[in-house]
Image (cartoon, rainbow, N blue to C red; front, side):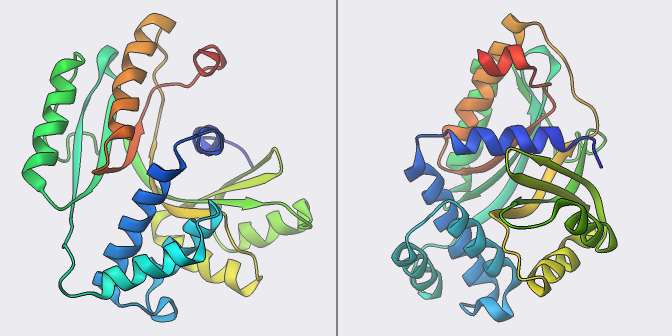
Length: 245
């Protein structure tokens, strides 16, 4: 199976080389906290928390950090977070979809608008990019001792739309509505993903020359560095030349 998972594979590689582990941990702590407030501290009865813990383990977050995040989410006096999304365009007409989790929505809105304005982009209205992105379940799984052919057949039976094996990792894509059933299938096989979640996958990507692509990437990186932004999705074609840059 092959297809648009190249985009997910590149994001996975980028995550592996990201030296800012503390920022990654911070975003995961926030996700665990929100999951606990939403569905309680028991991962067996809280699928979102179960996924968040799995993702935290996938980046080697210490167990104590995970437990503290769960405890924080259980504390009724701890800060409450608001989840919101933003859509807009970067330099060169590159579409950007942001998922944010914040304890101060006005601060986040102000920052997002400022980033777009300062980098030749523009903030759009919610829903304006629905025709560009599909919401998909994305799973990253270390191959380990798994037999590729046998595992692929299991995943197809479980509803996988796309599957790739590269650098010792499977990247599996499912329809959004099949995310939960795929999680259950992996649990039944005793296979733990390194990362799993619903992501915005572009239906098509846009190629820019290296100079314009670099300008678009600068805005994308600024969003990724903001503590309120949990995830950044875009439709810029990540060519080998751009990745080398």
